[in-house]
Image (spheres, rainbow, N blue to C red):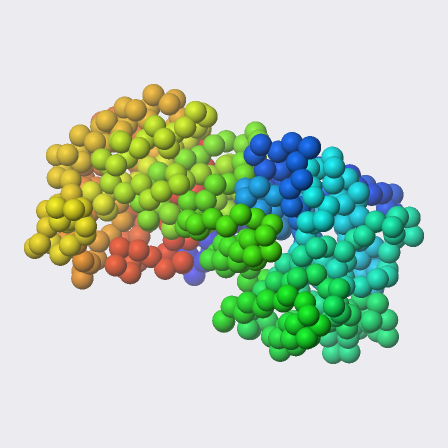
Length: 469
């Protein structure tokens, strides 16, 4: 119970107010200016003709904000696309979401008509969204009607591809929202408007979704395919509505979305690094945080990034940072040319492992420890000296547990290395993030942790970073 309350407290304190790169008004309705939050890739020019993508947030048409799909927009911008999260008018409770649909269609038309200014190829403009936002995107792609009377209908609002995250796209009798729409459901329901002109579509669902059953998603996919439309459905087992908002499914669905766009030829295929190692689109003006470390740090990078979204740009080097010797050799690459505000470092598990002559992990009795305590201490002192020269605030983490039965490491062997950390960092006046103490009651799998374990680590890291920030 205490852990649950602590988690809720931290999340409430750190819930992000994320910022887009640029906010552009696209429409005025009911005396209110509606805005597109635009994320542009590095190296963007107005003369570009990049693929573009517009996201619509969920919330049952009556709630939610564009910030909900910033992670997806940022991910596509990092891959070279122009990605947009759209604001739209929310419907009154119990009323048909006609104004929401009007605005979504207006947004798509505005982006297409301003493609030359946005650096977008107007024939490669996709749309997507979660839940009610998925409905809005699908409506733009599959239905003619419910347009704003002020829109120029000569400009198509049809997206060239759809990515829908547990969309509420069946609004017929018994479907989501039908009590608000009634006999007009064919004007609103993408499920009842599937045709050969539907855009290629990727849909994500959890098999425990109580708002839209998976059988509806399967029927939608099958009907699209029968009409000759490219249609893919990915079902995540044991997951309920909105599952894509949290790790590990946030990263998984983003990766699948990118793969879908690669298959369409919108993105160049690339080898898929671990999600924590992928480049991010930084938000200008936010502090820059560098997380250096091995696979344990990779495990907590994504939840740290989520907790500090809107508060800091959280970056991990594009590799597993391995041992402290490798860190010394590669540090200049990781630091780059831009200044850092905080650097959080975690070395140890690779230093204490046993390897053969080729550096391959082997059983303890068959190998030699990669770095002795003496070598480890020397490396830590050298690393601290170089990191202090950056003028960034420095935090050093202790090494997490090596349990019984771990191959290539001695159970409990991390304690001696952590004593070196405490000795050196105390002497050099570097704050210590005692992750070993935080995880003392959690048994890792080999030396790694479950998603819940990495969430606990992330909360500890964020507490340390927040003091420095």
